Length: 214
Image 1: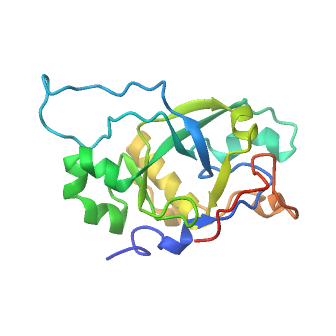
Image 2: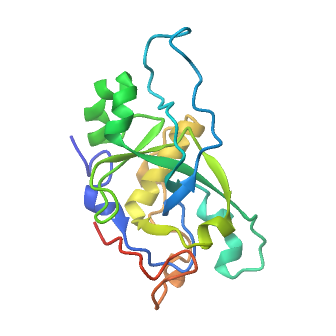
């Protein structure tokens, strides 16, 4: 069993930015992760490799994991949203495998079923990264909404099936809850009303953004 049965097909992950608002699963570039601790265990304490990537990440791609409904202010409602966003680093799968022996032993599960709880599998994205990636769900960082807008940093958005997969993965990691994708709605409430009719779609997107479908 492979993609489409246990996770979305590769072509159901990425699309060019299209929304005036932010959605959980939006991909941003040049996100600072450098304030995170990078050494938890050393060889003096433990000479085995676990499944959590502990290497340094200064700046890199980040996947937005703040729930879409928790960013209500941008939807033009009277609700007040807080001005902070939570993102997790997106790293090349090969880099993670180099350090984490447990992931190397479970590559087939990661690729076919996205079954490694601390990570979310992400296929290549044309024009951005040409290799397989993983979002490290266990290493969140908090940034201001302003940082995502100035300069504009959004480079792609997840398609609805992959956004739903992100919710499944977050429930599994943070809540230790097994959630079936079929139990979750495919689209966000009023999602269609947030489609932009101009380019760039929003203040989060630059004129030069080139991430295409794929």
